[in-house]
Length: 111
Length: 113
Image (cartoon, rainbow over all chains, first blue to last red; front, top):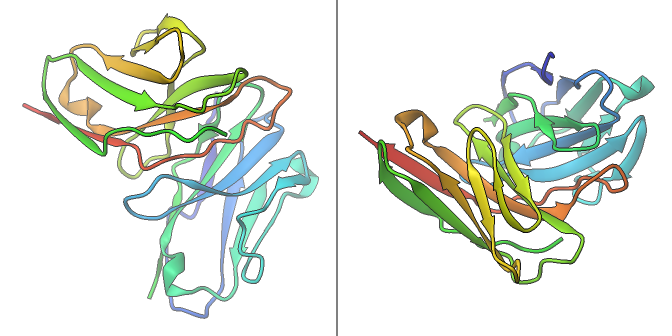
């Protein structure tokens, strides 16, 4: 079974630029999550989708972050404009009914 | 979702058994206890989940006392490759819930030769 795919794996941008991350969940997983993991901390949930609907986006900084999951499969997370404090690993996870399966993450560096 | 408390770091040597204890004093009746493992440059990986008493799989054992206010992840005969961050989480399980996870800081386990 293929795992959760994410791209790119690494991204370096300057502050005030925009960036987008892509996630392809495990086939058949209706629930998809985006997390932000700052160095030395545990992952923090940004947004949760059930199929193509948002279940929880209470911790998503909506003034600069946006996410979509068209057709209930792939998802993209966008940051516009980026700030220095957005430097982190962005993890995507998917779930059917049991545990969450995580992708390898995208490491974002904002300079 | 109940808050968890676990040691920031632990050291061990190859071949030893490692026990990581997690406190979750406010665990709810419907909550399960779940442990994830995270290696550098990888996403977290599910290790084990339990509700009460003892659960064992090919990787680890999970011990949960009767009051369920704490739990202990036991890793038998660790190797260098077990060096990772281990997260203890509590929350509901099953298709009828969101599966939301709240990660703490985790326990960084360093296994030495």
